[in-house]
Image (cartoon, rainbow, N blue to C red; front, side, top):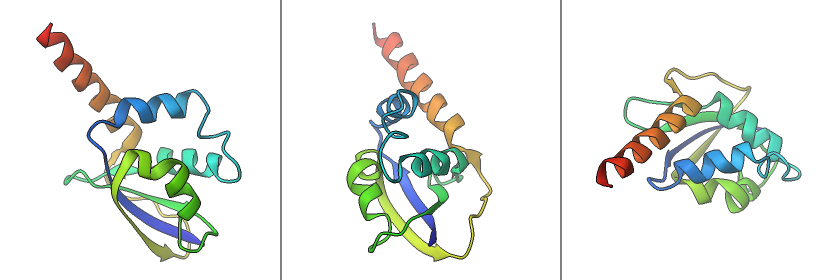
Length: 113
């Protein structure tokens, strides 16, 4: 089953999530790691800051394993809705948003020192 997923990135999670994506720890997770990575690469951020993506999952309830192992570490307010096929959504690419969030955080830290 494919789900539309909506969530909000936790305020302190951007750098940790990018590190986990880059070091391969998420993609190496079995059986769903690569699907999580691919889904986040398809994700977008809406004007209200909501992150939205589509993801395939066979868990009941939806994304149960993905939430325990990855998603709940980095996202709040996660909701799912069954859809027939993968969808692309309008919005800003999530990975771009993630990198800019990290840059803003790092700039803020350097301003204080």
